[in-house]
Length: 221
Image 1 (cartoon, rainbow, N blue to C red):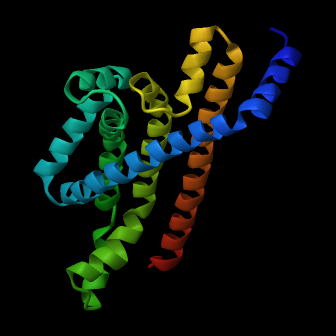
Image 2 (image 1 turned 90 degrees about the vertical axis):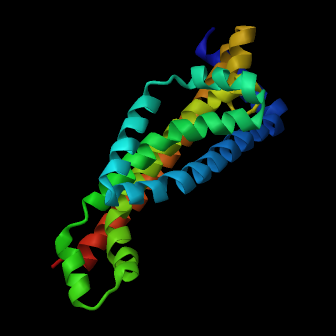
């Protein structure tokens, strides 16, 4: 298929099925966003506890290493006999896949906070809650944001496989194209997923740079 013909077919798709396309985009973003919120609610408190208790940190590290070797598609299919198809098994599988980078980077972030800053805060009369809110969390934030970025990129990429179990999203275009041997759908779906991932990375890279500059300005002692 020539590039001109392919471009014409892509333009034709958006002219005739743009509402369907944006529905797929919304489904993909919604699934990814809900997954990230749930994963953060689990991983951030657990990661903070892991930075305080060595046994919890060791468990989180081992747990994360085990999760990293589980293929996304395999995890999705393992859940089908127990939960069925649709949004719920997709959410569970994606949350599990998002946990490792969140856990590891949260633990790393809090462990990287220099004791010197805590000593200065204590000398200024800060209690434990003030130390955590005003010193530990701001200094750990770049690492936490990096973990969120990695998790979100993993979620966006893996959410394409959720189409297999009826969760919708941009993967519908990709697998429709593969089924029909129509490269147009594959390119539209694949490029859209890649753009979502790149935009997410760029947004979080910007936030990470801002957080680091703020830390350097606020805690240069």
